[in-house]
Length: 495
Image (cartoon, rainbow, N blue to C red):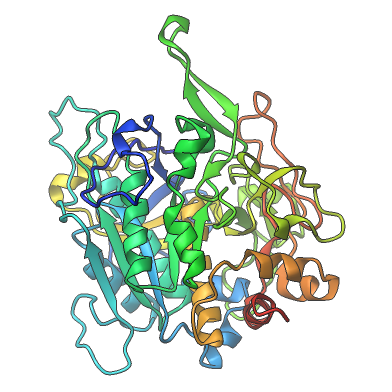
């Protein structure tokens, strides 16, 4: 499995809140979008067939197949579709072509059009797609092929993330508004991008621009200069919780490990070390883990286990609809104490000691059972995105995995719950664990994933097994949406 990491350093013009450190006093941090693997399937605007996906060892899920797997259809059929709710998606750079890509995606799968996508005439009641560029909007192109630079400004890498985030959130909540919030970068080593992104989220919260914030990026907790430097970045999450905004974060695509360079005198090689990733590890964030989704994509009306030709990641777990993903980020925080909402877990859960357990919930993330996403690459951007076969990628349909896939889909589900609630739910974690503590509600609202292991770097860094109840691979499990969404609203409101 190919893992893809990007080091990004961003410069932001907002003044920091009183009492915060200047961004330049923090230590360099490795930040990456949580896209672990992708494969280009076709160069056509017509989505690939399942046979085309199978030819490269993948099972590609359409929006309709995903909705069936997680029982979303009954909600949409009853008018619970995200109407009146705004999802803010935070990414570096943005994408020059996202309005076009979203239109191709919607047309291909017969999804609701959005005011703001290319070629669409806006009408009353239509959901809106808009973009907020807080410090300019650099073109999404790569440096020229002759460049000897660090490749850290290959903006077409993040364009893939943008298409994934926007298209997946829209597929889950087709009537929700989507606000793409971007921050630019001028790579200067030693200045990292988290202060920029957190200030951007603070702006969204302060100006009441969204009820849900989706973060498909992460960095190891131990990569920050100190626990205090990480604490200094939490201001947006604190404000979000106080203002009824739900914040979600990908748990990462490195299993139980991340990488760190040895000191120069020790050879400078890259070694794995056990850790969890932030922001997903923050107690004010809902951490989203990942699974292999082993259901039959030909059935778009119900959750049917694929027993005929299961994807490779599912073959060792016959009869299982979902399996814990080997690369799904999870474990226990080195920074945050266990929040009170994790004091009570479902029966049979992996115990949580004194520190925060990650993730809280999960959803499909393995690219071998991934989702179809459409992406346009400008001609001078092709060299910035290299496909797993070693050749430059191009415009077309991609099968994509990573907890970048699970996070925006969960953001869409929260938007459905916000619609039911009549407003933002804020921090949903207490409600999730309240449901988990009730055996009847838990069995009704969640698909408990009990097989798999996230030991991607084992035996150097052992993984955790998925277990009954909560575990450090899949959290409480994946959503049975038609039951969970209304019950989550009730639980967050104390019922």
